[in-house]
Length: 409
Image (cartoon, rainbow, N blue to C red; front, side, top):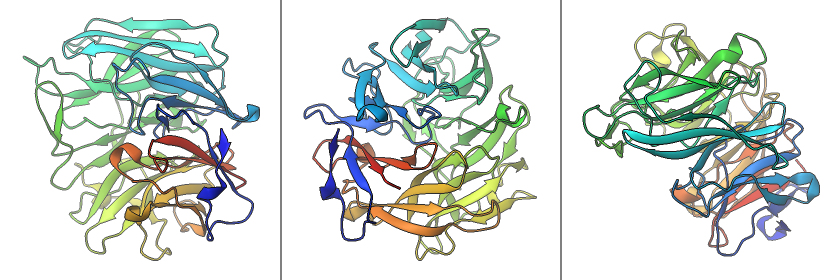
């Protein structure tokens, strides 16, 4: 890694440092999508990847690797995966293991393998191999989503994928839940508009809440028979739901779907709480707001108009909010977010979260401009370490996408 004082400017607060974590001159480096569970609980180590973008990697790219970044050892990078097709990484809640999938699937066939490896690179083992239809179904998954999610007790892991076969079976997507102890898998929900699920286990330590998974539903999406998406969403846009990891108790997060407020497509849990936050875009005022909410019983994909909706506009006291991607610390007290104007390289802000469901964000602090092109393959995607003392982001300011860190928060 190398220090980058040149990325600080006159608005940056004193005492912070910017560090470039990946430095290969001919291969890109990137953080994994900011909602992924890729940090050890002590905030000392995280996983990032090479030859990838903020939205994932090419399953056929032999150069792709997941790398362990040891912040106590000056950001030393060591490879954790070597297989072509490695995807969907999650660090176990105890910080001992990296779980990941090896995607060798194709519509209607192929193989999906769940593996784990110790963070020191030892004890690599295969948990299970899925090379036949999912139990009780005719579906074989392919086009595996690049993000997995692991339960807070470390017993279950979920990932989504395409379920069509390119011929007879109509395009559909589903969420698979793997029991890590029993080495079994169950398809818990599927449908034609679940093409971009962003599955996220609630990180609460409560036994019941820890079974909840937040998912995204892209109403109005379109795709071809092979699962190639031609239209990501339409009409009143996507909405966000909560289900139990056995497929029961379908609920709705009170966001969007009123013709004015639209979910941008990024949401995350507020630390270990049962509150979640999403980024929205609003037609009436042209803003990109951050809205906090809790799940309520579904009433037909009504979004913010769902009866009993509990909402809190976190950015109501920020002038002209233009926030996009964000993350919180594990306590749910700090939030980092990227912000516009994107045509000027974007900006990163740090803020404090107040009383859940009531108070807005406060103590906004501008940190830096990442000087990114902000193209889809160079999204900033900031997030925080679990303890909230360090922030991470992507940028192609050098001409090649790389991963960065801000310390001294």
